[in-house]
Image 1 (cartoon, rainbow, N blue to C red):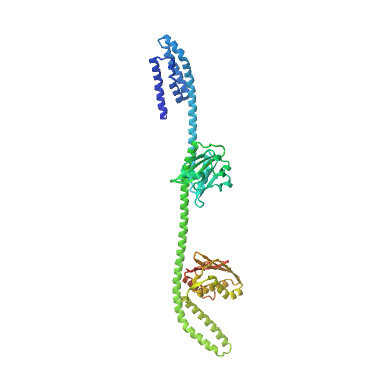
Image 2 (cartoon, rainbow, N blue to C red):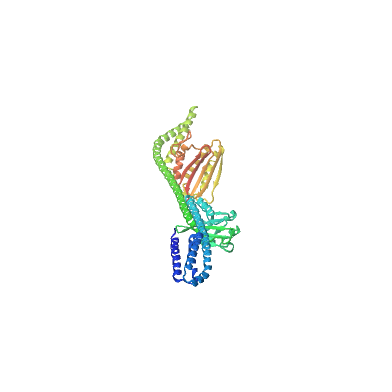
Length: 525
């Protein structure tokens, strides 16, 4: 039993004997017999119809006995005449007040039960929302559960969009889809702005008469508005707007309390989901950065290893070339002297064949020397497009003979590069001739030049057979070649020249579709 009911019972049990004791001792006139009405009414309020009726009957019996035992006959008759309407009133007040009290208790009990049911529904909704960590799903759940548990028939949840610096509808219910994306407010405008500034609920009984309500909301038929701030960790994470399209003055104090409880639960869930989303994005960015850094480290390591290989092989090649070059020059000189003499066939033809092969050996030796010690020259500003023009003119005849069509693509406003022009031409020419050899039946060579972030990038893309994946990483190594008569020095020398200019040379290939060689050079300055 509740404490206030216990105290009231004690008052009732003490008051009724006290009244009768007063009547017995004082023997007042008839009107004083209204005093028992107070404990009768109290009994009715405490115990309902039955309690009020029993208290009225008990009071009537007590008063009747009291009057009957009055020793003064004249006073007894007068008291009875004055008191009998009051005794009848006992029978009216007791049962009637008891009935009213019972109905009021039932109404209060039903209201309390309804409140408990609504609070339980809000609690269940809060638990369901808290189980998810996906922000978009949580926002949808917030609106769905608000519709289920709160007195509303339309609604919108506003969040602040940092890009547009405005409040936008994140999720809505029973609003025109054509209007939702157009319902926006500045930081301190409209209903969301007011709620965020004041950090408290806002009730608008008549939406049509308040300028803070967006015109599109009114156009959708909204008559009443209840806006609740969603506050988590002292930050407003959103504004939940409840709309009513049926009545004005649709939101009372109970609706505000329910909406506030709901908002307090959902705000924490939204904030947690937002933090988790930020952590996921940070983790994704960190993974991307680690992957990018790892790739850079691997590329750097590969470049260091390649450079060491090139240095070792270069020194070895230069040493061998020096040793071979001197006797080779003597052989070439003697062959020229012999060629000056008239030789009968087939000796003359054989001599010519020997001279060709010796010249080829001399060319290989010279390339070995160039690999170790590239042709010197001063760096000067050059337009890459001009260097490409010279190279393509030089290779024009071979391109035509092999039915290779050249397609040029150049970006706008290309800055010059500070390079040794002849060396970069040598690189471009080597790449063009390689594409010709990769397309023996003809094809298309696409040369694309563009500038990004202070780097000129030149792509040479062919439509040849491509390079097998297992050998792409080895094509810049000296003496590595897939050609029957190749020396394996062309790409190695080209790579050394480009890296010597602070750039890079790389290749990608798709077997059966072609290859792309990319030269990157830093712009001047």
